[in-house]
Length: 299
Image 1: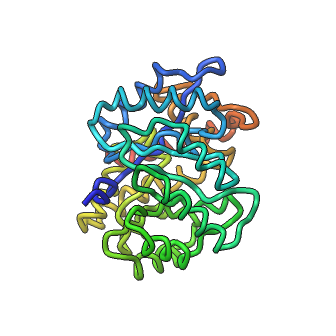
Image 2 (image 1 turned 45 degrees about the vertical axis):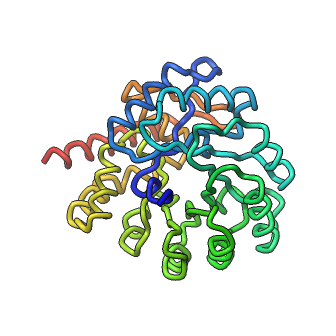
């Protein structure tokens, strides 16, 4: 089934910058780093990729470059964001060459706070014109509108084109409700790295991750262990990473993960305004927690 290619660890790739411009040399390093680290699929231009910070021309360049460098080694999902209206989203889908992608991922409209019926109609309009399978992205912390379990399930039952949800509500009960009542071939993916283990324990099939940009081997190892039922190993890795997760977001995403990646020589810590790099105090705390993680893993 096409859905199964999105089990395991997906990574929402950062978009590296150098002096304000997209740094394609660094992007290639990041791509090779996560593939070597064992991720299962890649999301290009998700929230962590600062999709709404890029111009349409830059988005097209990043899509093209990412597909070329991955070269069919794993599935790639196209993030399609920045649309507060259904009409704008449809225009964006029609404006992009999506050949080579395996699916698209799109969040519900932000700012306008649609009703659940409005969210349902929005996604059904996308379903009618999308040339690819769709991953629903529920991220109320960014959109200000939760896609409820009932709405997600309604969409999953309405069309086979909806293959998964990236559930980033932070509500375990909501994720579990979807897992319990969903169609058999519909995947629930964690949208919060720190909740990935409990979601998999309840029947989720993976994650679309932030931390895997920097630590793909560790995080993918946790996910694979959990999916195979080795919860002792999964729990150990989960606890090793536990204190790193909150520090990645205290100064905003992707500033935190880019700060970690800077220490690893993968890319700069640059983000685009109105985002700013992490504070020095946050940077120092991240370095301390990373050292603890490496020490624990080597013990």
